[in-house]
Image 1: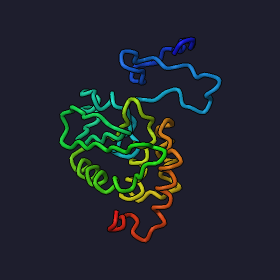
Image 2: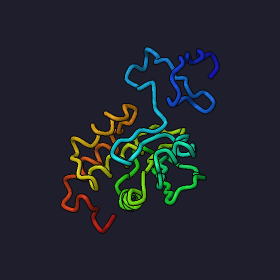
Image 3: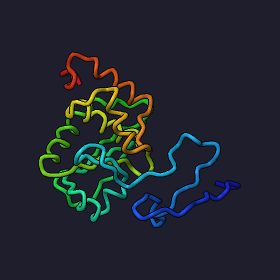
Image 4: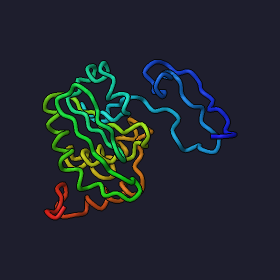
Length: 191
C-alpha cells in the first residue's frame, strides 16, 4: 500500500508461524490492533489427535507425518485444492464468513473427522487469505456434536490451546442456536 509503514518483525523460535520464507518471525503488534493475536502456530492439538492449523502445516509433510495425520479438512471462503498424501481430504467452501450458513457443511465434515480419527490424527486448517474463524467453527462443532463438549466449554477449549482460533459472530450464533434444536447433535432432514 502506498505510504504504508513496513511491518516490524521480531525473531521467534523455530516452529512458530511466519509467512512463507519467514518462519521464525512474527509481526510486532500494532497499537491500533491490540486484540488481534500476533502469533499463530502452524499446528495446535486442541483435542487428542485433533489439530487446528494453517495451510502451510497441511503442506508440511514432516509436520503431517509427525502428528500421524490421516485426514485434512481445508476450510475457507474459497479453498484451493490441497496436494497432500493423506487418506482423507475434504474441502469446505464457506463463502462469506459474515453471512454464510455453516451447519449444512458439518455432517459430512464430522463424518470425515471421525473416519480420520479411526486411523490417526485430523488437521482442520484455514486458508492463508482467510482468518481462522471457519476452521475454528468446524472444530467447535465437532467437539460439541461428537466429543460431547458443551457449548460453553467447546470454544474455550479451542481458544485455550490456540488463542488465534476465535469464532466470528455469525458462526458463534449458529453453533449456539444449534445446541438448542431437538435434532442436536444432528440436523433436521431439510438441511
